[in-house]
Length: 289
Image 1 (tube, rainbow, N blue to C red):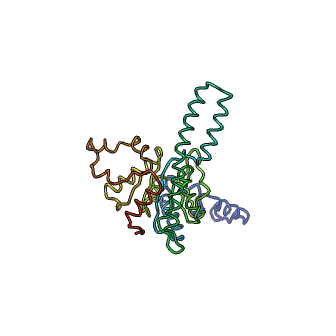
Image 2 (cartoon, rainbow, N blue to C red):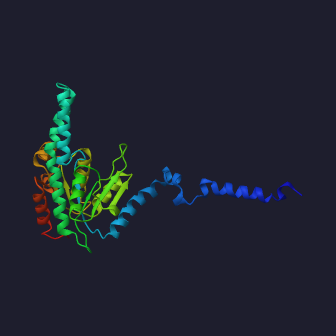
Image 3 (cartoon, helix red, strand yellow):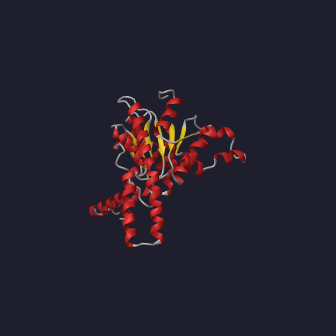
């Protein structure tokens, strides 16, 4: 009998079959974590990050959202004051320490800025109480899901038993979602681009409190989309007059001709939650679109 016609023993055939089943190529594609994490599967991952949150939002009948941005570094007044008290105690043990003095100065600023935590919480509480109903959920408060101002906004909605959304993201310093997000509406993203898309997909307003690079990035992306008419106009409210006056000189941009004077009318600057609510109610004449 020719060599190629020899039947293999059953034990050897079974061993070969088991080896084939262990091969990475044999895994179901959607169960193959290594493949899904590969460069070739990036388009699939992008689509998944688009589809999964949308599915859950539809399931909860979230029709429209109010997006709240702001710094992760603005704590509640209780946290801010506790941190300052702790530092002042350390100062008694280390008088004259220049590094500690600088840290205390920053802590004092955080105590001042903690008023925006109160305003963000109040804003979310009012909007959620006014517009969320069992069978139609409008102006649902949506944040980046982290601490600081985002926590305050999610917390305000949670105070009145309303749904509230958090779009968390994986970072080198892991950012945990704040505990006030509705569990079924707490999402985790890898891609900033898809996260930004979900910020805007259902947005009927955007409210930006004082913040850093992330807040600026998200604010200017929204302004750009509206300015270029990629999306329909929505009200944009900046909370904190003294902060925004120093942080971005919009008048200078218009004077230098790099934006049109009319572009300054794309947003409104206010100081309080009540003023922010009034802007939205005036824009939509008291009712969601």
